[in-house]
Image 1 (cartoon, rainbow, N blue to C red):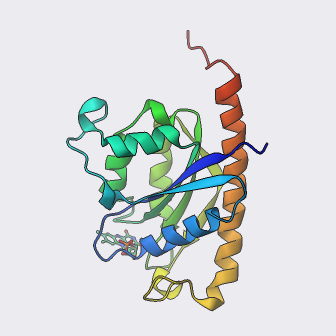
Image 2 (image 1 turned 30 degrees about the vertical axis):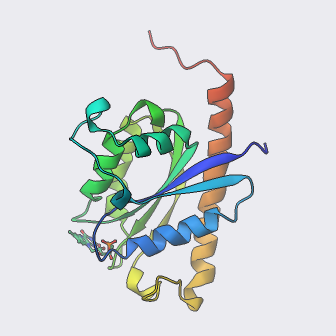
Image 3 (image 1 turned 90 degrees about the horizontal axis):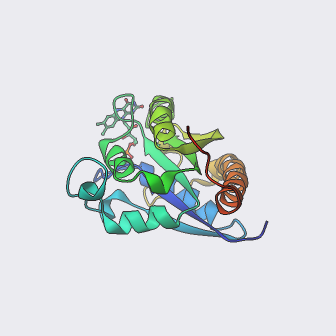
Length: 193
Ligand SMILES: Cc1cc2nc3c(=O)[nH]c(=O)nc-3n(C[C@H](O)[C@H](O)[C@H](O)COP(=O)(O)O)c2cc1C
């Protein structure tokens, strides 16, 4: 099972003073320690989507290239008004076929005590409708301002807890990514009558 995998870590918001970027970078940093995995970090600030909608009119070619290449996704999203940010929805909506039969892991971020749980729950049906398959484990970063310092480094007293949580989720995502990659490469697509 040592074929290399490409996994995109997606930060969910463009907000100028976003703190979830620290959690996303931490998730990517742990991903880079996993054997046989190449990480692409996706920051919504780096993309421009011309119009709403999917299909050719709403795409950013750079994002299309990443999604086509990725075997799996790890989305890190803040919670905005009990849901996920519009910038994440805009990115997700710009593609369709390139997501099919690929797994996705999730992490939620908030400055209160819930860690983005409502954003995660609201994201699940969107991912399913795109043909993505979700991991069972989820990582939560409640009170994110107490987890990372102002430079974005994880605080020493938090490191073990969050490293363990995120590492377990990476293990599940990589298992799913390898399994589904084998399926995409070796099995005919499901036939719908
Ligand atoms: C427009 C907006 C709506 C928000 N709504 C919620 C919310 O419903 N629940 C919550 O726990 N935090 C909410 N927050 C606070 C975020 O949890 C907080 O900003 C945290 O740092 C993660 O988001 P960030 O990456 O934008 O910083 C909201 C923040 C913004 C900017």
